[in-house]
Length: 226
Image (cartoon, rainbow, N blue to C red):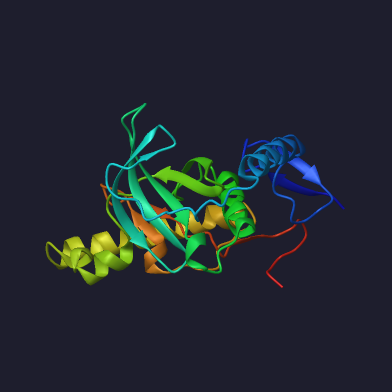
C-alpha cells in the first residue's frame, strides 16, 4: 500500500510505501547534501544552540524583518514579520527546540504538509512558505491581524457595540468556523485541537482556523482516528 503525501519543501505530491515519509525523494537528496556540508563545516567546532527569541528589527533569511512577538506557547513562538521584497506583513511560527520542549522536526513537517494539503481551503490559515533557518523549520503564513478568538473573548471585543451587533458577530464566527472545519474534514484531516486560541481573525473579522500541530491525515478508507 502506497501513501500519498505533499512534500513540505517543494509542495509537490508524491507516493511512498512509508506512512511517515514527508520529503519527496528529490528533496531528501537535497537535504542529505546540505546536512553533509553542514557537518563538514562544523567539524572540530562547537556552535551554540540557535536562538529563536528574536528582537524587533532582527533580519531573518536576508528577506524578513521581525516586527514583534505575537504569541508563544511551550512549543513555539509566533512573530509578525515584514517581507522586505514584497512589503507584505506575514506571521512566522518557530518551534522552540532550544527550550527542550516536546516539539520535534517530524511534528513540524507533518504540520507543514497539512497546511499545504489545505491550501486555498476557505477559512483556514493559508501558508505562504516553509523555510529552514539554522536547521530550524519555520512556517510563514498569512497574518491574522485581528488576533485569536480567545483574546477577543477576554477583551470583550466579541460583545462590543450592543447585543444585536454582538449576536451577528458571534453567529458569523460560528458559521465560518463550521465552514472551515467542513473543508478540513473533506481533505481527510482531523484537527484534534479546536479551541478559541486556534481560531484566528483577520482585520475584517474573517475566520482563519490554525493550530494543526496535533492534526492527523486519515488514510483512504479510514473513517476516524484510531
